[in-house]
Image (cartoon, rainbow, N blue to C red; front, side):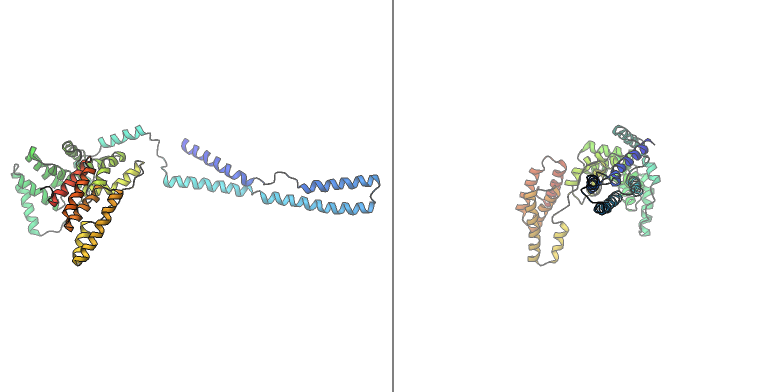
Length: 398
């Protein structure tokens, strides 16, 4: 209530300050200067009559003329006062409109009824939200049922048999790996996650990061995109083995983003969004959410666009003649190379340039750009990992 009272007083005060000049006459004085002149002329005529220097008849004519002018002057003063001042009703109407507009705007874009929320209170609320969020099983129960997958009946029958066989082979990684894969294919993500958990338990220390990443992918899909405490355990385990793991950083950022800490989500996502492979699911997801997280964290941030020729652009050039294809690709590659040389760019653009040179058959230039990019991004672990993957795919490090 105190908040609304303060707002009302401030609004009325500002509106009153703005309306006061409109109600004030622009005349600094209530008298027209001509009136004083005419009055002085009447006094002069009276004195001339007393001295006998002005005939009575001529004095009367002069008084009549001056009186006429005096009446006209008084009339002009009255009209000026009326025209220069705005009627109070109109000014009050302006004040009312300003007040209604101010409160209407606040009701639209503000947060009526939202209590004070100091930073410490907000951080505590975020911690409580994270600590008290639903479990994996609760999130799975609340998630909407997945749309059925159309599949041949023979396939469905085979998976039904696999669901029976796998539990009878608790130490068979092949059975559980197949079950996890096919449950995911049927969009039965909760069942797929259980099978993946069993697979990781069987593999023990030999379970790879890829196995852990697949588990958290399935857990989040089963929970309709939310990060449960159980999924967080897997995420922390992944980051404990590789602090720059793209999937781990994305999902940890998603957890913070879901629990009112977009500032932490932004910090975790920025590197992978700017330097990760945009074809990667986790990178693409981070790119799609990072600007909103930055906005909610009060950070002015615009994600750079993905520029330069993509592999799809280069593959589409296969339909052209050899000369046309070479000319088109060479033009795109030259523009990208010039831009990176003059402006720089994210590691993804350097990867595109390397691949483009490889497609053109210019392996020397591709290797040179790769070496330059490694020097430039040497301190960025995720960027170096992407460059290494590119080099391996092109056979440059073999």
